[in-house]
Image (tube, rainbow, N blue to C red; front, side, top):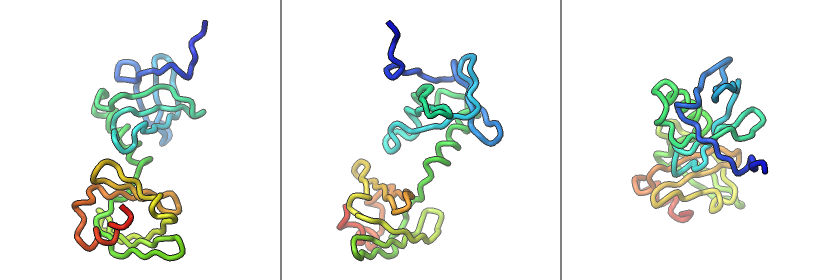
Length: 167
């Protein structure tokens, strides 16, 4: 009887997989097979940023899972880190300058960790603020951009008062 492919999980590590960049894309060699382009997906994007990474081929079929990127050499780990940071780029909210709500939309003016002032709009604000753990929040705007408040308790008093209603 043939094993169901959907139930087969292939662990990827430094012994059976190697990653490289070719023509600007992340590729992978697994055993004797070479994949010219692979995509990385965090299985637990908020809880375990560098663990349990799904590696998919161009057809978006899962090739295997990296349990922890620390099992790879520093150079491979750097490639994986860069790819994950590019894919999961989020702006970190340092301060909420202004927050207004009108007709089911909220309009945000924030200062990011890069000291940039950013404006974005949220629809259905209560549903688009995701609490992660006790002190972290992820915000999703109408365009699908993500913003993160790493520590709600570390926000200045005025910023906290603006967001308190939605938490």
